[in-house]
Length: 164
Ligand SMILES: CC(C)(COP(=O)(O)OP(=O)(O)OC[C@H]1O[C@@H](n2cnc3c(N)ncnc32)[C@H](O)[C@@H]1OP(=O)(O)O)[C@@H](O)C(=O)NCCC(=O)NCCS
Image: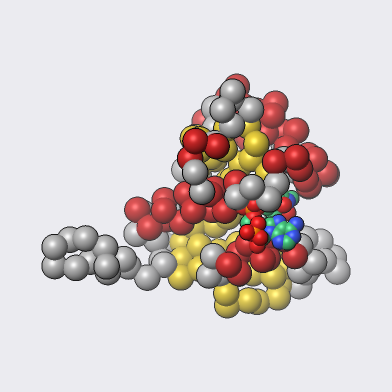
C-alpha cells in the first residue's frame, strides 16, 4: 500500500487522547485505559505504533506485545477508526508488526480474536495466520476466543545476500 497515504510511527504521549478515543470506540469497556496506554508509550518493551494520515490525524494503531526472553510477539490490539477502514491501514500496521518480529528473530506472532469478528479474521487469514485454537472463556465467562499463530520462518537468502 502506498506510504504517501499514511505514515507509520511510534506512538507518543501527545497521541494518547486520540488513542483512547479509537480504542474506546472499538472496544468500549474493554478498551485500554490511559495509564495502560501511557505505559506502552513510555516504559514497556512492547511497541505501540500508529498510522498517521497526511496532516497528522491518527487513523489507527497496533500494540505489539514483546517481552524480553519470549520467543514470540503478540498482537495485543489493532484498531482503525471507523471512517478510515478498508483502505489497507490495518494490513500495513500488521506488516510492520511482522517486520519487527522478524528483525527480533522471533519465531511466531500470536493473537486472539473473537470468533464472530469476520473482518479481523479475514485480515489475519490473508496474512497467513493459522493454527486456530479455541480458548474457552478468554474474554470472560462464555466468551471464547480464537487463538491464531503466524510462524516466522527465517527469510532465506541467496548467495548474493538478496532475498529470493
Ligand atoms: C479489523 C480492523 C482493524 C480492520 O482494519 P482496516 O484498516 O479496515 O483493514 P484493512 O483495510 O487493512 O483490510 C485488510 C483486509 O481485512 C479484511 N477486512 C477488513 N475489514 C473487513 C470487513 N469489515 N469485512 C470483511 N473483511 C474485512 C479484508 O480481507 C481486507 O482486505 P480487502 O479490503 O482487500 O478486502 C478494523 O475493522 C477495526 O478496527 N475493527 C475494530 C477493532 C477490532 O476488531 N480489532 C481486531 C481485534 S482482534
